[in-house]
Length: 108
Image (cartoon, helix red, strand yellow):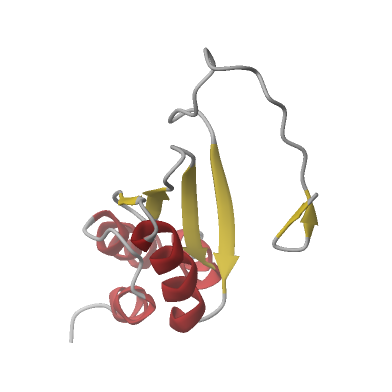
């Protein structure tokens, strides 16, 4: 089986093992349109929005829909810029790339 072009294996552990917060699938995106497409597909089809780019699908699996820009921003060499990006992420459910870019630039 493949998931977003990557090999993936799922095991059926029976009804006593349910998806939980200890496991999530992370999808990296390049654009806001791509971020919106994945996020909206999960949330709109019986899922639930969670904070910081996370959402839960109708079966209870958690997903991190993560723009690559966010990962770069969190690893930014300027600690102040990284902290602003993290603060911008913490205040959102679905990640807004323009908001992360603005946080990196800092106050005007």
